[in-house]
Image 1 (tube, helix red, strand yellow):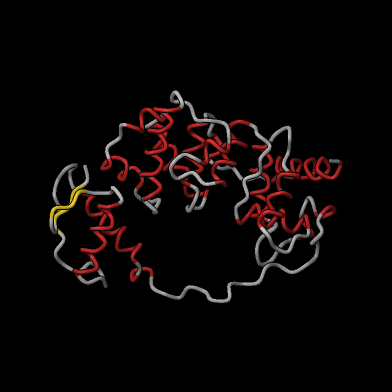
Image 2 (tube, helix red, strand yellow):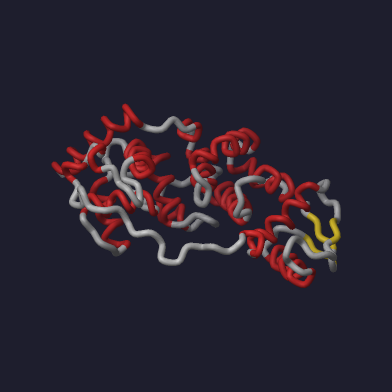
Length: 282
């Protein structure tokens, strides 16, 4: 406990002086925070701000989003990528409106049961929206905690160490501070231990950064199924709501049969309606 308090004091003093200014840190309500966490699952936090602000301005409550059309929803999500997150967020909003009186639940276990909400997002919402001392551990928080605790590997051990370190008085501030420390000081390849506010309590102080990936991804993004799905959704999003769009030709390097297969998969996931080679979003 004494170590946790010492780390917390040093971390918070550093954060007050050097923390990043991010629009998304203006999120106040549990719903605003839930939307933010879903958007930032696979998108850099400094890119999320304008999308998040517009989204919660348009759908300020779970009940409001629950009735959104797929066309409007995907239009608002354009630019964030990983469109499945948008559909899952709407499903989560429907569950919240139906089963939780329109209020985002505060229990991590209940949050995890919502569509599209995994353990990290559930803990992030519980900590930042409700002040629960449960640490959300992603790759960045995990790196800082792993180094402080001197843990080589093992997610359960890292999670336990994070739960031991997180502030009991201000979990939200702790999460933001550790995120900023990971982004600016305790970086993956070249940690700046000499500038770190918690170096005196870090078991890994002065050691080298993490090794680079052994097999970097050198493939062209345009050749991936993710790129193809994104182009299909973009075309449908540009059409009027309910208007049919015909797909008979290749898209980029993808032949017509792969386009057809992607359309079938997207229809099965609820993104669109399919009629032969025609598709639309309502």
